[in-house]
Image 1: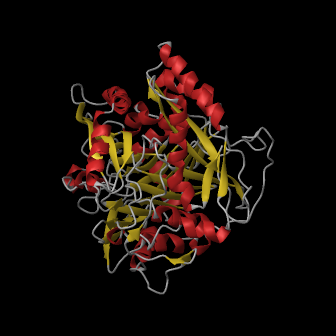
Image 2: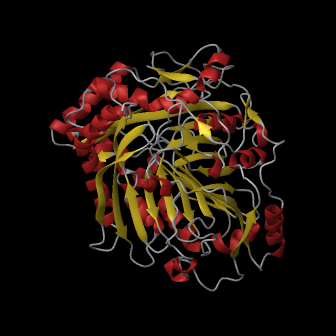
Image 3: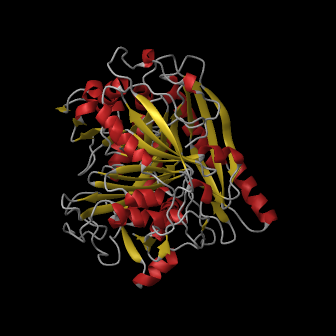
Length: 603
């Protein structure tokens, strides 16, 4: 999350920006500065209800511009008295509203309406609140995810997610904010019209305290503590092409990630090897298709490009991730269909494994996320415990940011190279990325696509490219990033802006409508959370959404046992793409997440 130091409370939305005036009560935020170090991982483990954790960090050596993106981390809790929930599943909108929030959002209901239309209505009804802490745009509001299949509402393929919601957003009235210098605040919603609910929130904030040295529950023998993180990258095969969409990767063994100030748990060295050693073997994450089939799909994309049907196609696949050492074959098929064909052509039945006890130290999916993040500092990490889903995301990429005053910005990543210890060789690698015709072509195509997406809702003439194919140097990678910015008209619907740009262009290709149709035909399965967006719609009018890549999605049965776990990966195919290189890229993009769970891609 960004440091938005230029914003002031006065720049937050007024009721004319979509919040109906004249409602009873006086909803407002109360903020309490917390003493001592605050570890959001520990607080998450103590929490028994659903939660959303926006987890920002960067390795040492990241550029100053990137540090701004990772200035704030947020733990948002969903069990407060003013809570509400919006889910869109099987083409139905389900809105659940607590009694005291009913005067804002209406009664609980089920409607056959488009997701973005319902979201727009809910945002208009959300009370306008000023940003609580200078520099942080998050003023409570709606948090969660928008799945890739919502693209059907914007001329995309007509699919729904398989077995879970296409969108799940929570209105939260309690959160903890942690700045990158370690300062932390508890933020709560209060309203004079509801003194009992307000008292509950004040009591929650008063009960928070800094990290307790005696309450650092271990994860695989490693204590969870706010200390610097160290990580080690996995070996890179000679000649292998690195992923085009990748964030600030794991630093080398001599590099410490900037972790203490952001409340990161102690990692010590990357635990992936120890996890695998404890299990005795590397677990196999089975591909939805085999490698040869994927390479043929790359050639099919190139055929479509040759025929003029697309310039670039983002082709993806998925891997079924085993559920830990006691159930290596527990994951359902990677396409999400129970009993569907596996990569080897056999039918795998739905398998029930160890039950999950939601909340506190018993959330083993949270414990797993803590392992994954230790070797992979990124600015847009997230962990979501929401209903029947556990989402562990290590995304380096922003989809959209909307400021409270109407500025809008997109930052697509296309083009990555690994760094080298030798400074001379490292400079050669950086120059190679900067001048790579293929990487620049991929980046420019998506920049042009996003310019068009933003122009649909921005003020005429305001959309501009602030950076084009700029190479940023991090501790372990060089990456090519562009920035497209614009200005929205007063009162612009935040839901409409996101809808016009959805799904994220870096995950579709160009032109978007034809590219998504080509990818859908070749992939033959929904993507679900993967390739959608994760983030917040703040009550201040600000929005910040990441691209849901490098994201492990676990779907649970009603009894808490695991139904399936999948990790999506893919890449942009252009006319100059090599099928073998594209398949290598897919494998490389799985490493940072799978290594943290002791697994490796097998297809």
